[in-house]
Image (tube, rainbow, N blue to C red; front, side, top):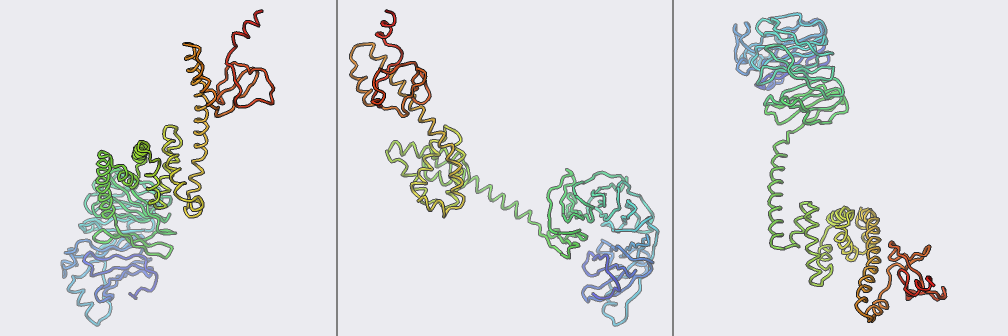
Length: 505
């Protein structure tokens, strides 16, 4: 649309979608007929650049023409200029405008019906209420003002911002107006009392635009920080932040149906955003239903002891505790049947790389606790005995790091088991010694002594013998050649009767 002689600063469309109003630095406002893409009227009268323009919001008033339209009963346009004045321009009815668009004549002139000095500094924004009864303006003088559209009488001044007001918008349902300011805040004002009822803080720079969503329960704002924020009015909380621009977002608006958002920034980009709330809610509901069904299947398999089917479902649901429970049952069942880890190896063969990584991550967590380390080590054994080590190291990304995390705790558990086995020999010796008190037959003990070997060789230090790597008891070795000592040396625990009697002599 070519017509203005300078930069276009503001634009607004009629609710019927047939007309467009544009304001420019050339001090004029132009009315365009969208179907014919022609400029049908021009408004002149401001002495400075026109920074903002707004059209009537009631669809029916655009059909009003004649004297009624001239007297303010029809549609109108409102302009706010750098000259600090506010002007109301009545529009001819749709029949006249359509005739202008179809004719071959020149541009028609619009006459201002009302004019008022509105603010002490530049006016940044003007907007019209949904019922066309009120007009709101925002200025660099840190205030917003409410005007009656029929006579431009001042109804109230909204004071509270610490910097200039860049935008003001009426709620589609409630008697409130929202303002956006350079002080990084958005304020919600009561129209009846002209008092602030809500303040929204969260932008890191000045807030340039604000809009109500269709229901009037939420706000959208854009700022100099390049961010778009969604606010819930009832809770004063920011529900979502969208980062779509690299510079100030000067333009923000919604589609009439409220499902699309349009933004324009100083980075020379116009972005179109689609509301996916319904799709996400449907997907979440479907996922929840699917999860409930899977959990029911898992419960049924566990109840019927179908552990192999239950294992795959537990892994798909990402439930480590259920996986541990199922693996424990599988291991116990295979142990009773003498099958070792055949079932685990069969599952490992069918696992994808991601599934294998998932199970090994579980093992890494289970291995940190002694009571779960046995199952973790059996699963790791099934993996390393089924898949070649070279393939694990090269073909499975992340597996070597997970195994490296399992190794330290595994070594600690093996050391603990080694000490327990060593300590168990002392228990065996004590039980056999208690049995020898009932008779002189030591054949069973001698047979045990010949058959048994220490897991860790005993050590002698300061007259004490260390058995099993940790327990130290009093004792002495029989005299003999140290070079001939072997694992078959006999160690006496405590002092014998012969040695005690000889010491007494």
